[in-house]
Amino acid sequence: MRITLTYGRLALLIGGMPPGLGRWLEPIQSYCLINELPPLTVIVVSDIDGMPGKGFVGADDVPEAQARVFRYDWLAMKHVPTAAEFADAVMRHPSNGIFTGDGSGEA
Image (cartoon, rainbow, N blue to C red; front, side, top):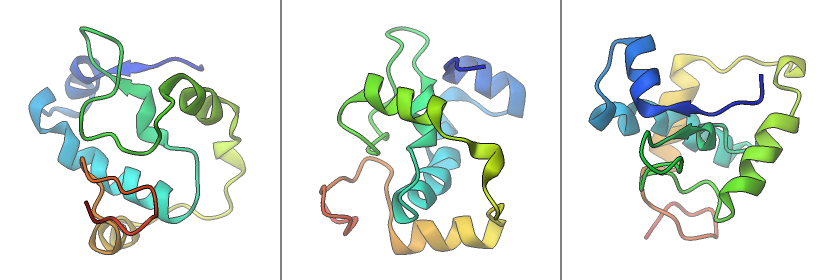
């Protein structure tokens, strides 16, 4: 649909609370970083300013990153990540608010 989703709306959809969504989004963000995928979590934005939260570190240019996410053919992916792969991604590349630009995952 090429639209963003607010933290408030996402919280309603999954039964969470907006302040805690960063830890739910981190595995997706880490997986995308490790696998050089567009930063999918960039489409989850603040109800107030329309920007991702401070834990989003997948890209510096938010509008361009959102455009990449919208252009990417997610349905053509041959592999659907498992829960274990998401957990491994966070272990290998913690990413909630940590960005170095070199892929190391260290601040």
